[in-house]
Length: 573
Ligand code: PEP
Ligand code: MG
Image 1 (cartoon, rainbow, N blue to C red):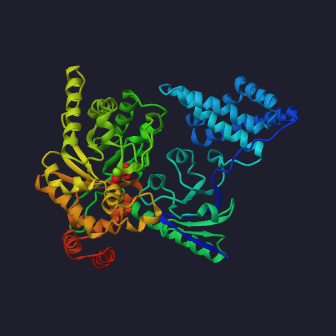
Image 2 (image 1 turned 120 degrees about the vertical axis):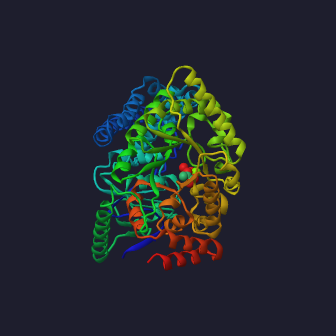
Image 3 (image 1 turned 180 degrees about the horizontal axis):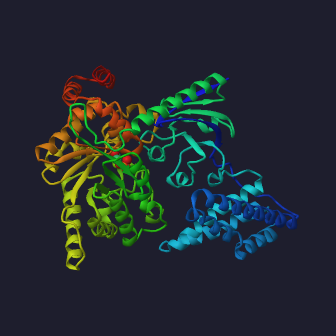
């Protein structure tokens, strides 16, 4: 019989394939007395030989599916296995202590890892430590006779089941074979969900316990539109979902007709629809979905994809590529927003009780301004290659904005003095994602060139509900009248000073929110590229004056989310 599980619909679409569990097995090692040390040494040799074979295979598959660069990491892993020091020391522990191979190997690798990780300023050694950790898992798994998942080798259609997916897990997934993913934790705005939308694969997050409910190779249907997973579906269910998938594909074809059209409402009001991107690679999706701008370039992925701080030149190349790729259409680049659920191991930030309320984003940039200045110089140099807008994340006070802007001006003056060409038309704005900034938007509007409302954070801070925590996801309420009032105040404040207001949080692409935001006068909507065409299609059906009436009512008369949803349904048939 079919089992049905529900979670949070994170990325649209329907998929049907078998389960692939991306769950780490238990690799706890016990210490056992081994009188036959020769046999233990042989076990170690067999396990490392097998690991080498496995890694060589993984590497060749990864090279095929992900490319040369991504596959190179496996060379480093194979090298670890050939390190004579590591092997000799393990043998010597087996011999002298008469212990089992897995225990000896764990002891010796621990020593190496501690040593290398201790060399704090040496990025190379830090990487070696990470390589040893990875390889150790494989060797110990072989010794314990358990199988490790290896997403890079997937070469048949699967649905990934995991606790959560990190950006580096996602980077290893080949879209050709990974048809969907479902996770235990996360919310609609957690970064794994955002990645799924940019990969254009259906995803459901926050199911709480999918990893325990599904076994490897179980047949699954993932309905990313309604947030439902079917385990062992019946023939009828499969037929019905295939039909829905076909209808969804037809709808997508209809939306595609709007690829090169501007985003205008039924009564001719033009708004700008931009795309949110994480890397220059996302430009393909931006083009394929007809974005009129990039409303948010999350530059922190540049820092996260690297094992040390990216250089000014590396950053310059990335920014230039995006600006040139957009051929003078606006590109809003957000300065580094590390922190929260986006970690950067090499910055060695201390663990915090409340990372989302901690040392992150502009707070790091202003504190460690050498990192910030490098990024700003790269941006300023790239500015002549297109239409650049710079945006600071997590601004809480006007002073922070002034300080960040002053550093930008200083770097600009220094570059110009050196004879470097810099555009003289760079708009500088802020993310409005902290309630304090939203409330004081009227004062901010006198100093910034634009606002981009970051509802992913603004909602979590306003409702005091962690955006990653599925237990409180019911409080994640974009249509709550309180949020609508904040958004209205931000937009009105911008307009009063002749500035524009955009939104780059996920709410901007939410089909129930769009009519309200249009009514509130939002100028720019920036969203996952895959939401652009359906939003453009929706806007075509809306009358901006009627939507103003709708949003006025929602803001002034509604008390609950349900009332707002009902009202939207009355106005948008
Ligand atoms: C936001 O907070 O709404 C936002 C767009 O930024 P991020 O999701 O990267 O925190
Ligand atoms: Mg944010």
